[in-house]
Image (cartoon, rainbow over all chains, first blue to last red; front, side, top):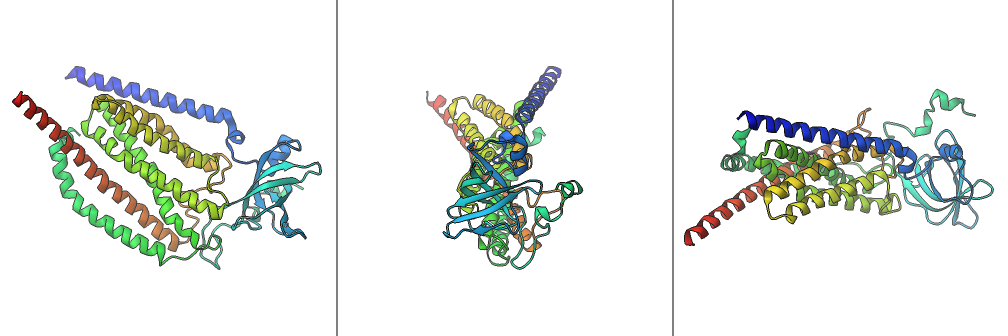
Length: 156
Length: 241
């Protein structure tokens, strides 16, 4: 009986150690890869920080800045500003916008920067946030940019 | 614990529990679906499409809960060689795989009108797809080997390795920029959802788990009876020979 007990204890040790080591290894790999390479899109401040060159294709995401949306005279081209409350980036897009596209709501776009620093997108996806509310009511948390932190407020 | 390792006792216990949880499952689905489809508001942004959430979110919760269930069962099976634990994992896997597929499909159908795309390779969607493949791998390993003991051990090791994916699924929307929204219910500042929406969601969440309990008990009984038949057949054959 004693032998059986030790074998169980041994198996418990081996399996637990293997699990802990494996989980640790995966955590380190994820940490080493870093947030940006595993993210679907870059936010405007990351675009500035990384100094992304024109012509390089990437996805840009953030909030559609309030009051920035304009429909061009041809009725098919749209201009708006994507912001992460720290940096802004103007976007131009020709195509059909998804139903949930709105000022103050999230958006993920794909395209390239042109020589004037405008992000020319060929795909625009709406990013729904985690807030749910009945029609005519407001969600518990207002839009992300409504309450800038002290640090953000200082950014000119 | 080995008191419950006796399959005959397990069968008797399951027969006592089953009628009760079947009744509860029917009740939970009936009231949950009533609130979800009739007695809850549309969303201020999504309109009626919000109702997809009542199918999608409980399916996603269940897919992760069942994975954890299989992982715990695998751990017990590997260390204590508990025969029923092995069967519990085997019985649960197809249910979990189905819920994962349901979450992926309903999410995709919601994504097209709301986001404008069926699929993006973002952290949440990709990690859930990985979990779906882990389920399929677990089921395939069980089928791949003649010897049930060996097959069960291989499948259990795979299930334990895949456990690392669970926190990745849960926190993918916080660690990385994803198209998928972050958590609305299980988050630090309380649910970002009015009570009228939270009620059907939570009731259906419970209904899905009850349904899982019913089906997993059925499937475990089936497995045990199948084994009994195999043993009897072998005895009958050796008697003839």
